[in-house]
Length: 449
Image (tube, rainbow, N blue to C red):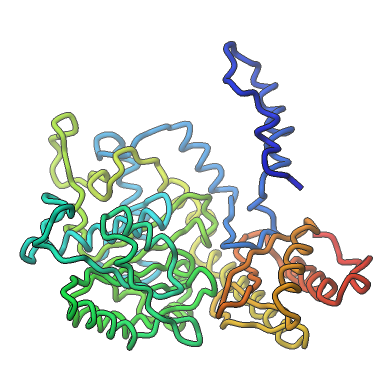
């Protein structure tokens, strides 16, 4: 196991003054870097949300590095700009979003959520004194505190966006969730009403379709109806589960209402075999996004009319050619090939959950709508922490944890293309053996992964 400081201790303090042979550099990659990585591409990586460096995606990343273009303007890279427009529209159609949504590619969902909430803040400009783009937030007695709403299960990127946007973390209302870890819509309505009564200005709500801890889906239709009544921008965080919307039965079932927000984030790098980073932000009113961010200095003025300049869709000027890998992945696997793999991941998760639920020593503590299973032993937190540590120390698997209802909870997130039924079976055997205690787990004979 790698101890903190291992790699630092092996690296010189200063950069070399003279060139080194490339073969020596590559040898050090093999010697220093590879053994001390956490191998996310391993089929036993089942922590957080798995990501896949698929062959077409890796090939595309190599080409992207070789092309080395900056897709800030249409003129700076016509192919990168127009491919991004087209591939985002392919995904829009695959997940059945209305035609008024327009998509672009960011690095991660944290950026996509920040950009979406900046657009939500900008759309307030029609209200008296709310022109934040021009006047800012500081020293504004004429502008009440802005408020963002999210469930107590929503991702921490919502809080970080509020910090960056000047809304402030104390103005993020963490709304209670129900027994299935979904946002309580009645509690959301009460929070909005209380803030209005206190003179604050509700700005946006973030509904999550596939929460980080449990992958629960907030009641999207009900939240959307409330946001329409209250004139709130609704951002839907479907960074993980949104990919599953390419499967019609999942889109109409667990993800019903995915199309009802003002903005939506989906991360192909989480569950569509696309190497990190690749996050799609879809916005129903792209003109609001452009109005929030478009800023064109003289040296970036171009003569082309009716073209997309991707620098207008966010705060970043430099933009990598991320669309190439998504395009190549979609073509190499095909929509139906990706659907088959998503369905198999969900099947494997359900099978594992059934095995855990049937074993008296374990309990499954959250619904399993997709491919993530949350569980713990009945022996208490100390046993749960020990089990997690022993499974991870075994070396064949890597699991993560969360806290649900104040209790330490283990997570298995299946999402790598290379994870097969034999791996999940081997994990089950390891969990069952380790939970039985040291004597039963010794020489358990689990098959190699």
